[in-house]
Image 1 (cartoon, rainbow, N blue to C red):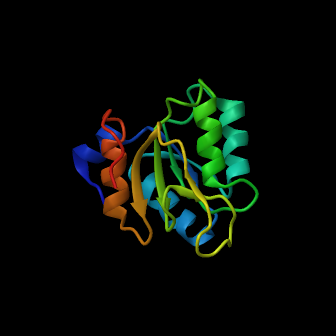
Image 2 (image 1 turned 60 degrees about the vertical axis):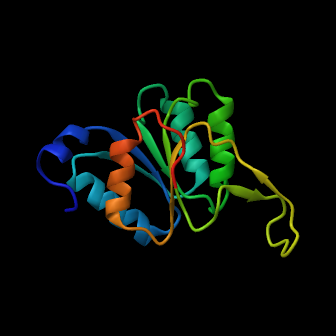
Length: 151
């Protein structure tokens, strides 16, 4: 357990939509979040995340922890969809990825591949992989603070 006492109780009870395609990373995060009082909705890809958000919003996810590189629907596409939907645009997002927020226009394009930035309106924190659990809990505790994106 990373957090303890009053801090865990103050933040617990919130629902986290955890979108991560690596099952080991997803399982560790899910276990740690639940141990600290969070309700966790795991999603193995962006399609599952969008299905959940579309069917259950408003009010079901307080924050999204989102990987960028995933099968079926990428994290960039999830961010685009959330930004375009007024019912989803206010949900804070913590991006957890080995990639930057700049989306390659063509995957595998190598040097010189065009990139375009993704909408980061609802991205409250960017945490590069590899990460520590302390970074995750710090980001969660700060993500409801209306400050701009921090890396």
